[in-house]
Image (cartoon, rainbow, N blue to C red; front, side, top):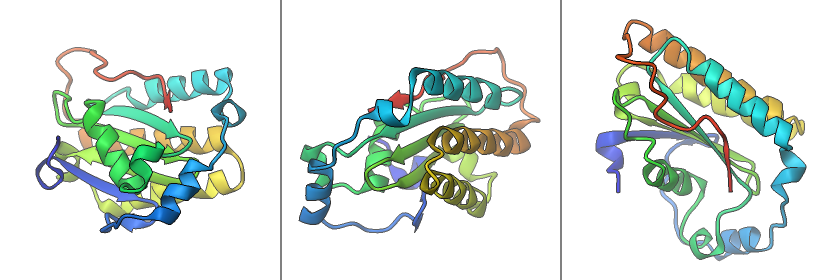
Length: 186
């Protein structure tokens, strides 16, 4: 598993990574959460999000992965909050394993209405945490207005702008897309 202190940095919509404890209340909330992701994101919405990711990855070496999860699986919800789940997915999906250490995970949990951004060590060195916090807050605000696709595409566009600002001077060796542009809906 990826060591957070050496490889990744995580920001959530509630602030910098906080300690979490086991929670029966959180487990119940996620266990009984009924969500149909197709209600939130149609097939066309997924295509639009993928196109936003492709567009946001142009002009820099950064890689963006979007994961939208209805709820944390019940076997993990007792022990994990959304921040821990985002960190787990960052490692499992290999977002940390990009050539320039420039992977970013935009994690959205619909049950909690939380947004977490996990980014690799190469990005931590060159960016300001307030930038990422503002992106999280903007996505959350748009989700409150039930503009789910707009929220995700806005978040992706802002991440792309941030990466472009900090990585535009690095020329990629090839136009290799290391991570899938399709959003993962769990």
